[in-house]
Image (cartoon, rainbow, N blue to C red; front, side, top):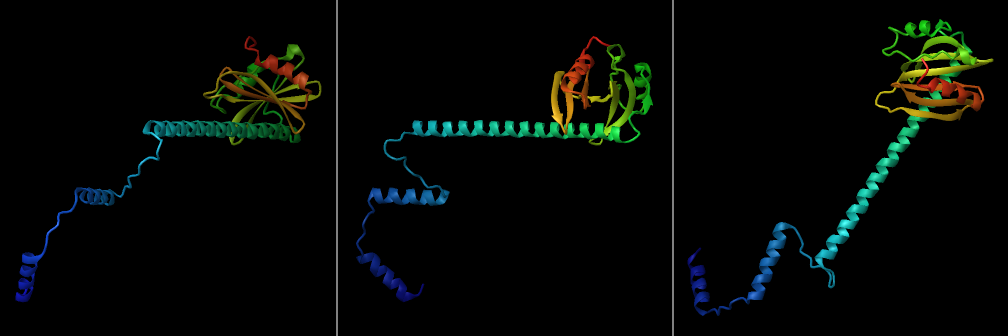
Length: 224
């Protein structure tokens, strides 16, 4: 600082009047500095609203949001399961129609389940359940290796009068045993059930009553 500036500063210090800031002003300034430093605005709740009531409101909102999320997930899983079942149902019908259109109804032609079941050995990584219904007037025609949705499956072929019944079998990994569920697709009657660690899908142009009877015989656990 040069000499004139020193003289001016000394003159101001000797003649200026000092005033102390009131405590309220100092507190207000310190509060503003603290708010600007943190970037958080401190707001007082509206009159008549207590912190306990506000917390209850937030808790209720959070609970409602959680319930909504759970419900949404359940709906998505249900729709996904329905879509998967729908794709399998269509694949089963397509496999049945494909077997009737060409000369590939059976790979091993036999009415003896002791011939049909061993035929799948080495061709599949599971042994399908093969039941003999000849005593019920529903002879076994044989079996073949088929593919449903790029999955290798066993196809067992039965005959009732002039109607062909395809029974597709593959492992039911992680699926509990369930009773038969019936449906209709493209004019064909379809049945689906699980048991003995396997999934079974039966499809035919038989009437629903006849297919139910066949399925009850196939699903009966006391038959070999």
